Image (tube, rainbow, N blue to C red; front, side):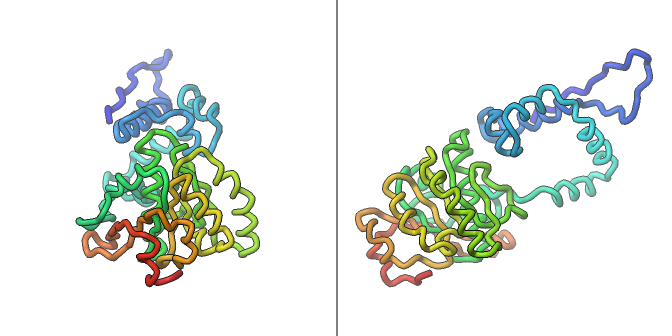
Length: 285
């Protein structure tokens, strides 16, 4: 990231009021946006930034170009008074993990039938993320969601529902997150309220984390989408293949999570392309 040039303009009366911070808030926002553009290889639009912030596009534009954000300068004035080690620990302690396909925590086993990048290029089909702990499945489907958007520079590349609160991980801004720990009737009502909107979205890739297991009445709807879009689901074990009969002529990709010794608490992945009949004897969720 190119470091912002500090301001050297003194006040008209010659006195420098606290905090005397050399960057403007707009410069800080601009530097962050430039850093994201350098990593993603494209400029991040105000529309996407507004989805990340959870505010309107007009508000986002105003933040980047007009608002002085005195509180942000105060925050940095406190942050820079920490020792470098304490400052880094503070930042790391208040930033969630951002799952990605190249994250050190995730390792794809060599010899798999298809790479994750190739998998995301498929416009139709079904991908099942299974095995491992629930947190690991959440990490993988979130990483795939981030990659689907990042590779195209637009949030409309992916949509979906995740029944987990994004406390420890950075959410995909185009997903709808619902607290899966609420009462079953309330959960069902929250999902059904947005269900049609998610299925009819323009996104060619749909992601559903926890929906298959928690709301079995929606499985037929998911299966019907497979011929139109690429559907990603999570399940503790491979689903009952009797429910997959409409997919008899279509391959299914199964991402199986295994533990990994390095790095610590890593996620190992194997990806295989199978046919519904090949899975008839698999474990059922």
